[in-house]
Image 1: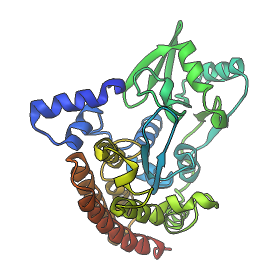
Image 2 (image 1 turned 135 degrees about the vertical axis):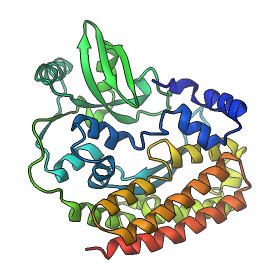
Image 3 (image 1 turned 180 degrees about the vertical axis):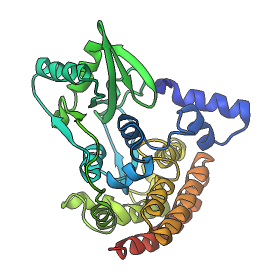
Length: 340
C-alpha cells in the first residue's frame, strides 16, 4: 500500500530520479498507473470480473465535475475537484443499474455493525464499507472527514485486512473508528448477494450523467460549482486577477494549488484524464462511438491542463487551457444528451 502521508515527498524523489513530470510521477507513486478508477476497480474485483471497470464506472454515474475551494481555520485554502460523478455514492448505484442483487446495511450500533461484517465474511463474501479516509493510516490526514469505500477481505484476531488502492491492514479497532466517522454513512455496508440478473440499465446511466453535467445536481445554490457551470467557474477564477475569488488574490502562492489541481485531474477522486478516457471506454462498449471520441479528446485536454499545472505554468495560460477544455466538454455533453 502506498504511504499517502508521504505522497508528495515520494513524487518529488521520483521526479528527481527519472526526470518525469509531476503528473507522471504521481501516477506511479500513487499506484494508479494500471488501476484507473477506485470505486469501479474495487467493485470489478468484488464481482469477479463479471463487468468491465469502464462499464461499472458508467453505470455508477460516470463523469462529473465539482469545483470548490474550501477554507478551514489554521489551513491554507484547499482546492478540490471531483471529476467523477458526485455526490451520489457510485457503488450502490452501479450495482442497482447492473442488476446485481445486493444488500445495504446501516446501523448506529458499532457492535451490530461488526456482527454484520463478520456474518458477510463468514458467508464467503467481500463486504464493501464506507470509512473516513483521513483515519486510514496509509492516507493523508485532512482538515475534514471524507468518505472512501474499501473492501474488507478478512479479520484475523484484532487485525482487519482491507483492499483500498491495494492490500492493507489495520487494527480492527481502527477500522471500526474509521467506519464510525462519517455521520451520513455511519457503518454503511454493501454486500453482493448473487450474480447479475438481466441487462444493465445503460439508458438510465447515460441520461442521468448528461443531465447532471448540464443542469442541477443538488438543487440548491451550490449547483454553480457542478458540471459545465463548475468548469466555467474554474476558468473564470483562474483568469481573474482582481476579484477576491480569483486565484491571483486567493492563493498567495498558487504553486500548491496548481499541484492539487493536477492531482485532482489525474489521481484523486478520478481516473487519469479527469475520468474522461475511461468513460469513453464505457460509451464505446455500449455502442456510442461518436460520443466516446469526443470524451477521449476531453480527457487529452484535461491531461494537458494537469501537465501545465504540475509545471506551475502562469495562471493566464492555465485559464486558457481550462477554457479550451470547457469548449470541448460543452460539445461532448451535447452529444451525450442526444443519445437518448
